[in-house]
Image (cartoon, rainbow, N blue to C red; front, side):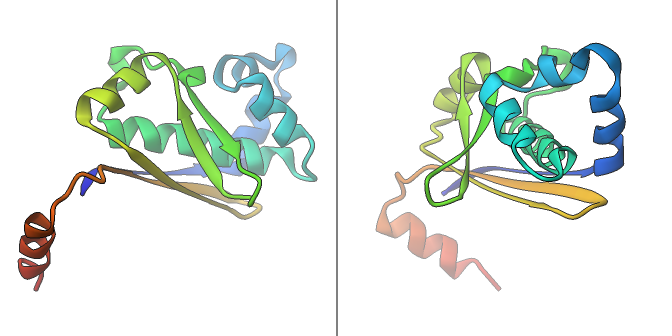
Length: 141
């Protein structure tokens, strides 16, 4: 059962500009050390930073966490598993929110070009019985 959906799109050039500012302000405020190491190890780091930023935004949208609620960017960590698939690891308030919603699975996909980075997130609960599945399918046009 889908509990939340989030999407975000980011201009890679905007991320490049932010990363070029002195002191690494945005980079160090938004990304964990693991995310920084992963992105900086790539040929075009800004594309990977942008995709991970979009993923964090998409997770917040899927969880319905408003910006005014004090998003802590590093509480959503984007890792790449051994198969190359991205996954979101939640900490702090986002983790508590996901638990309260009954989230059991976070599906995440990232995409980027030289110009744009995108992320889609689906929050799911596996606790759907056969009757609920059937009624959901029957309601589709």
